[in-house]
Length: 446
Image 1 (cartoon, helix red, strand yellow):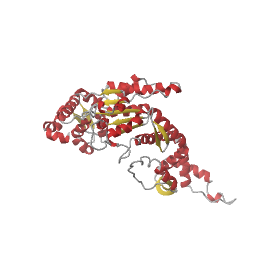
Image 2 (spheres, rainbow, N blue to C red; image 1 turned 135 degrees about the vertical axis):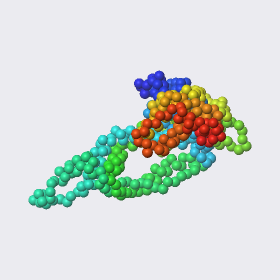
Image 3 (tube, rainbow, N blue to C red; image 1 turned 120 degrees about the vertical axis):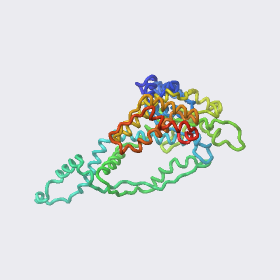
Image 4 (cartoon, one colour; image 1 turned 90 degrees about the vertical axis):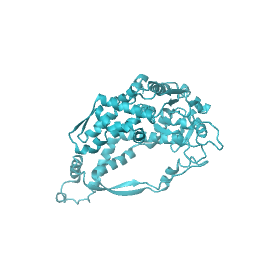
């Protein structure tokens, strides 16, 4: 992060998300502030709290994508959750603390993957030695004077097999592996009052109680090499270091994207307890403002986790959140609905734009797609029109339209090797105009 300025962060986000300049600036500043905080003296560093953000805007305009790309850019643990799936502690459903446990699990897997990549060369060497042991079982000792009759020395034979192994000659040979198997039945708990923490150490406890079994498998050499390399990499990784680094990264760089926060924003009084709206808000409050959550990897502090909330806020508004929670999201940015010109840019400009994806997919069959400029304009116009006439689902409408547009080509592609298909405005109108004219039909199909 030391070389990424806010301007560079926005430039990177521009490669994947069209428009929404204000939202990109807000998250870029939030990310840079994390780096600035690490440079502060320890006594001041703990006092600097993250400036959490609420993104307000309709679906399909880039809220989730901005947060996801930001986390990837920072190499930070990232978790997307829907606020509407949580209930107040003490009731059936997931409690809000589970999001911190999930984020920590993700971080452990992330660090474990990084460490595995660091030892993959050594793990491959060890896996090769184990493979050779399987291919060349230990020979019985040869009495003195009988060496010539028994053929070349064992070491020479081993090196010949090593060369064959590296040349891929033995890939289809079958070997029998002994792999550790600690599988046990999966049990699911629906925690009630006072039981929210029951599942934290249950799996680890059962894993320690049940004896480790050795499972025998017959696999080809290519698959055996992969399985053995995984097992050897696991032995080379210090899991205590992995867990410590994962907890540190969650606490200092973790990002939680709270989607659908508008669904829990209502504060109207009901006859019974409001366990899935105001109750969830009150449970969220201590986590967002900073608390300590028990996980199977130890205690995790949430003081410096960045929370990015998002919602369409059609039926509610941010001021409908309880005042204490509003205060924990000091930054609010509004994302703009996508225009016709935005759709044209979305189809072509991002690194993995839809037109590039479909062109690459069909190229695998030997079919070449050629999108003309007027075709892109026509697709954008249809997407805009359908969004206005039915439900505005933003850029997601383009996925549906592109699938309908290329339905015939995708189906027939295996029988069209070497064919070049030009997608122009006339082609788009021919395939989609009838659906667009019939509003009732487009409501179900587009």
